[in-house]
Length: 392
Image (cartoon, rainbow, N blue to C red):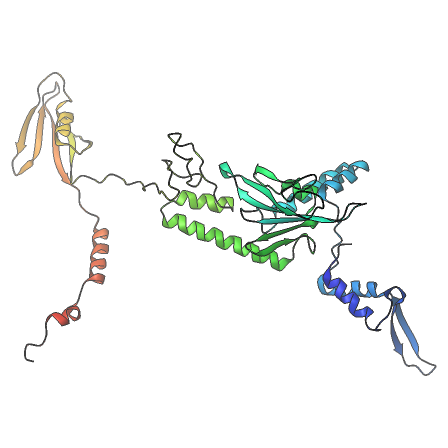
């Protein structure tokens, strides 16, 4: 059974009810007495202090954690020897799920990872401490900082430094499976985020705390991307649940570093990690457009042929309907800006009109602009200091 300090405290408190007692010789008896005319009747329970402590612990915290202290790889190998394929696969899958669902996962550059090895045979117990650091391409490495293995160099040697990693997505993956989560202690920003010696899975309060911290970090980065005008990065950050790795696109020249902008950014790449691609701006409408309309030979049909920003282009479209004769252009009485194009045709002359159409502003936008101006306009009280009382 995994050691739990709470269970140990309860057991010790029961054992110390008799000062100086020997725990191996202790037993606990609980008696219920019913007074009766013929004599008292009793119901009793007798057990060891450890059994009573486990009963109290279960009522307070649930059943004690009896997770095996063997590593996931050792559990899988043990199941394999028993020819238990379901147990073999289940041990590995459960370990992977525990790792990826941990509130502190994934590890980050700067995390300290300590692994403790128990004494085995003639080998004494020792420990190793690794540090996680960034590598190229958004990967991470893990280097040995120190160890307590006797007769081995501090920077690694023999068994020391066996789990050092140069570049990987998850540098503690092998350590988690081969050494086991119960042997690991992970420290982030001076706080223990995984205490394998006390609890491999973590309690509910710690899980809620780290999930809240992760959510807050995500929201801060999403807000920053939105404020910078990069909604696609904000969406990618929400979907990944993790900080976005750098783009990593090679520089244009050998001297230019790889693109450090977040992966998934809009073109172009840049050697400046804070560069922001300017937002798209739609072209502004011209002040005036030219509409081309045609009237059929019998003047019974009117067709709208299109809008054009250039007047000459509109005239070319209006004059090019009949390729067999020259079109005659003329102005209109009372509408000098209009151009009428007479086009001879076998069924009778047809007419095309080029009419200028000024682009009018949106009245709702004008109302909003006026309201904004009224809200920021200065009033007479703002000029009080400029007009002192002349009678004084």
